[in-house]
Length: 185
Length: 189
Image 1 (cartoon, chains in turn brown, blue):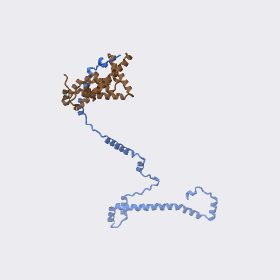
Image 2 (tube, chains in turn yellow, green):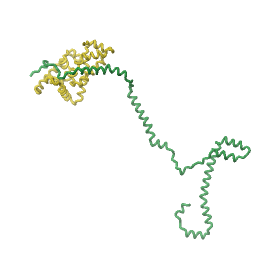
Image 3 (cartoon, helix red, strand yellow):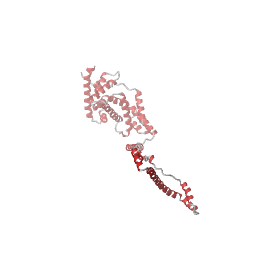
Image 4 (cartoon, one colour):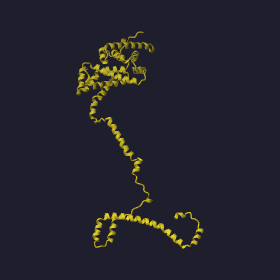
């Protein structure tokens, strides 16, 4: 039985029901958060570490959670920040941004499943060429199907800016696929 | 060719994680959050050491060790601790006479009827007298040695004078003529 956000928060705030609350929170959001982080970081093991850290930070800062926002919005925010920190670490290991982009595209190819469609792989490679903000907006809107006002709360950006970012991101991705589709297939 | 991504299947190319993956993840999170709290209670109390105090303690320790081992080995300290070097050939040993020997000698010298009382007095102030007498004997010993040395140096000269007096001037002239100068003669003068 799935618990509502308010019930999960209540369990988390009471020490005797802390573990139950944690498990309920993870049951409710682990899959969605995992895919959100995985699409940004690509590597499965790193995504696992980041997801773990996300839940630990949520547990540590549960007293700061304000009930006027949704729990998953808050968790998305923590997860996004953790994933961006991990991405910056990975970028620092590369000499240039081009090297980092190339590395991420290779990671996409290496981590793709055997039954993955070629267009899906190309789409993921195209997303890795996007600037950070456009990447975040595109993933949340395209894959998670989050409404703009929720994305606005997660990323602290206006809805107008988000729409513009998504529009630019979509154009770039389509152009990338168009350019590379004929070469690869 | 026109590509519209909105019409594509919105699936990611990565394989789905197993059910065990999420279970392991949950266990890890519980262990690092709720589980860790229990562990902290069991752990021994850890004292947070301020960096300043740690550095100060290290400096004192190093200084202490240096002072203990380093100063004793320095040549200045070794030289200062050495006893004065005395050449044994020139060392003058002072004559040692026990208080008992003094006390034995003095009663024999005093033969008066009041001797016994004087003897008692001497015994009572034995230590004071003995020190004074020791000093006197030291002085007398030193003068004896000097006079003995002077006498010894004079004896061969007197003997030579006696021998020479036995000869007549002519005999002395003959001896002077016949004798060769002894290169080691100066050693005996």
